[in-house]
Image (cartoon, rainbow, N blue to C red; front, side):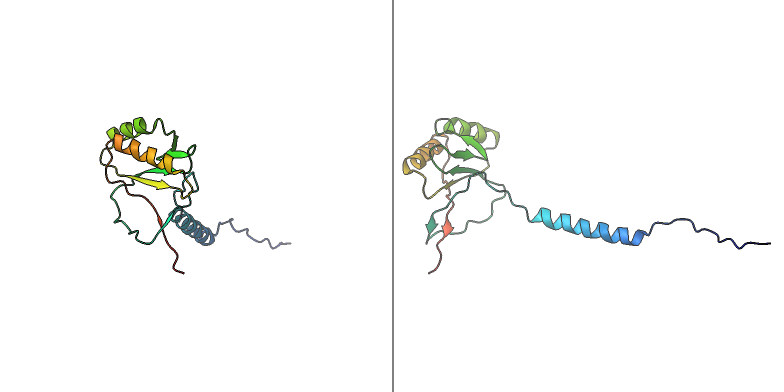
Length: 139
């Protein structure tokens, strides 16, 4: 007596669906990384200005001096005090003298601290300091 036996097929992996999943994951990672922005450590409420102008794009990222209050001052994302600001600026200017410096002061920052920061910038030899503002909402 002869029994019919089926031949077993060799197991195979369907690669088409794996390629589709890989392509979707690749597109997802590309899109999510392009939308990331460098977020400052301090949340600053910029003052509004009617006459502010958009400056042309710089070739290099500027060093940003952020002033939130007398205790919260950062230079290039590193916390500094108002007393050590001049020395820090001089050392950073020696490393990269062509890198521009910009100031971003909170609208509630004490005016005396802003003036001390401007004095430190002047003592470090920085001229023409742009300040960040936000456009005033048209009402």
